[in-house]
Image 1 (cartoon, one colour):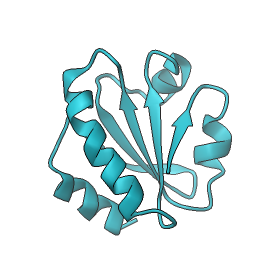
Image 2 (cartoon, helix red, strand yellow):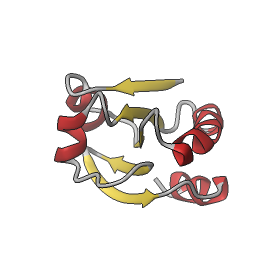
Image 3 (spheres, helix red, strand yellow):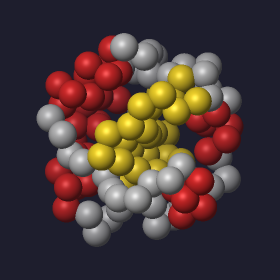
Image 4 (tube, one colour):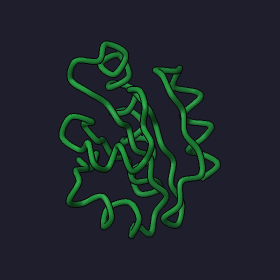
Amino acid sequence: MITKLNDNNFETEVLGSKQPVMIDVWAEWCGPCKRLAPTVDELAEEFNGKVKICKLNIDEGMKTAGMLSVRSVPTILFFKEGKEIDRISGALPKDVFVEKLSRL
């Protein structure tokens, strides 16, 4: 299951999460974001119950994206215990994300 983030629920869903969190910061108009979307869906299934997978549409969560210093999309952020521990920019192969998620 993918949790949709916005400026109102970021603190509760990410910073307050007991599980590690991966956030896909994306946009409707972003070609690489569209190519990455099926991979994020697969990761949500594979890591269900282990990692909370979230999506933040940058156009609907500009305040949060700014607070996170997101400068381009797609940007993937990894949080553990309410703190950002890693990030990836760009639509990279699935195995890169699996490796990062497996270490959370």
